[in-house]
Length: 588
Image (cartoon, rainbow, N blue to C red; front, side):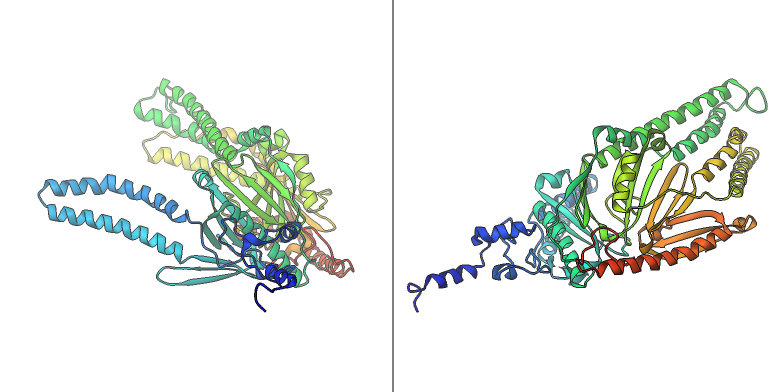
């Protein structure tokens, strides 16, 4: 039959088989929008709609971003500009003066050779960047994220979607102007970014973030771990106000560093002054220069602390400017940053530990922060402690309320260490103070400086106070579904660990603890803090209590896993939330 004689049904069939993304019908677009995903068309017009979408309703594990795909076309000029700055500086400092000197010395041929070498070197760098761009491809498949790269030697990586913990998007000011972004993929057990896409378009970065999250849930659903994924709706649960940003800037300074700075200036500043006028009236420096030094030392320390507070406050205010946290059924998404913008995801099914964090200033003002640790993930987006800020700072009641919405823990019934632990802390601080005084006194004897070794002795009355505060801010609580620990005075951390996330429980006793029948029980998870040694721990508890905790937590772990299996086998097959997915293993 000729094309002119084709029936209407044939024409309809031809339309159904169309491959140009610009010819997708309005019904198809509406269907894709209802599924909460991309319509499958590349925003730049160079992508193709997936085959499953062309043939009908796609399966849950069908990627809606067809590949292989290349990086953004502005990647090359942006990287050339980055390299060009360093090259230009090197030329101005070394190249131009050197070539000019060669021409001035009469060695023109050598000067031309050097100039030609510089030009060829710059051309080689540009050529390598272009080749690297053309040889870089990424592709999102049903269960992996594939990357093919390499100029001289080819490298192919297949990252299982189930292992991807977070998809982070970062942009500096220039990148935001150009409309490009860097996408980082973090995996379980990784101490660094597993893969980076430098650079893709804004829209492409957001689509990759959404698609990887959706396909990861689909893979888990196919394995029977969760219910069939649906279009995820996000609600904003926290936005940082200007007042909270100001509080964050105020409490950002580490008071431990401030205290060391103050005492250090009090000890060494008078000594520095006395070095200019070595003659003093009395043996211990009771002279005009010593008095001036004793006054100027602490004053300089206070000024230094103020400057440190202003700098750290400004940096943190810029880092968390515009912070917003959105929550869906399966994950949290955050956005923050003034000069450099970060957008990332926190999968609720991968949450290992929740930490309510508050330093001395924050506690005094009634504020706290909330951090979340996921399985084996050490973020590369500005966090230094291996955790991600779910709330940088907010009123403590609000922080605790959000923490309990993520994990419904009960922190009542805290048990502190026995009082003999307080005596141990007092001895520890007294010994430390004595060592400092002895070292300063020895320095006074063997050096020309007159170190004011007796200044630290003013802290002696504070030793029992510090021991009491340390003891008071330690404890643990064993709930029905969680173990909660609390440690620290300067920075107090209250860690919440669901029983089903526990990996191991072990007891340690130092030689000093054994003398007082004390022990430390560490609750190890697959979280990133296990890598850095900052696990939840019941510190300096009685030995018998430590044995009881070590035996009870594994029992609660088995009970929690049994309850989760029963819940997963219910007819509805649905059990949302962070406690509904995973078995606490590193691969969650």
